[in-house]
Image (tube, rainbow, N blue to C red; front, side, top):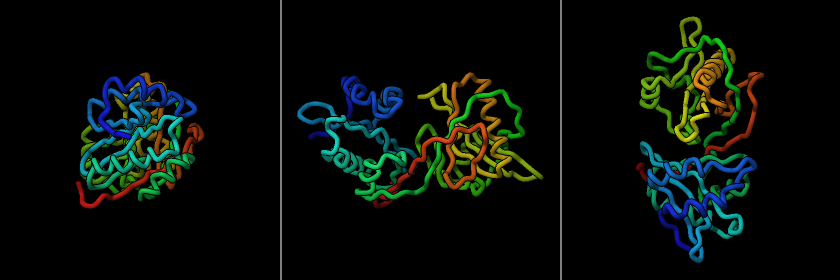
Amino acid sequence: MEIRNAKEQDKGTVLEFCKETFSWGDYIADVWDRWKSAGGLYVIEHDGAVVGMYHIGFFAKEAWLEGMRVHPKYRKKGLGTKMMTHAESVIGSGTVRLVIESQNTPSIQLVRSVGYCIEEEWRLYLAAPEKKSSRATVAAALVSLGLFGSSTYADSWRWLPLDDAEVQKLVRQGRVLVLNEDGRTSSVGILNQSNDFPQTMQLGLVNGTREGMVEILGYVQNKAHETGCEKIQVFAPEKTLLDAGFLEKRSLFYLMKKELGKNL
């Protein structure tokens, strides 16, 4: 078996065996070109045939593993372990994260076997674009890191580290939403819109009071309505008490983490 950088001619083969990864299909077709252009896209061959793939995303001092797929006929043959080992050899050192749906037992067992542990549980919710009024606004000044209640946030299905510098950047980009009550910020959210999924608006984190979070959700629903988005994905740590009748509660995900020696 050989693991190598993906080539353009690998795309058709990979997309064919990824067509039915999930009940709804797969997203690899939407991201393949960007991943290949960015680098870090690998395939694994068996007897000259491409039977698996994965991608490494690098940012700040961390790495993100995503899109690991194995052809259905070649599962349970150790290919996943080989790709994990290869990925870690490429990354070398530092923090590595990945996310797995909580019902995906084989993948959870695989990453646990090579030393990953659950850092946090996250819930996906869906909401519909809708014309609404909201008291939430875009943050105009620095927001305290402690208000977010997490050390990461979701952005286009990657969980990125959240620190003071990242909060400052997000505020400058106009992506931090706040609700101010009685002269203080009671609730916060982080707004995303991916180039890979332009018809989907995301709230990559929301935290605060119930009333405040509902106001922030209303802001996002209205913005999605105004910009013609078809759907809204909302991510929140499972510990967040997110309760709104218009939200559709979906899958639980495990954010998993491993430290590889020294920082990148």
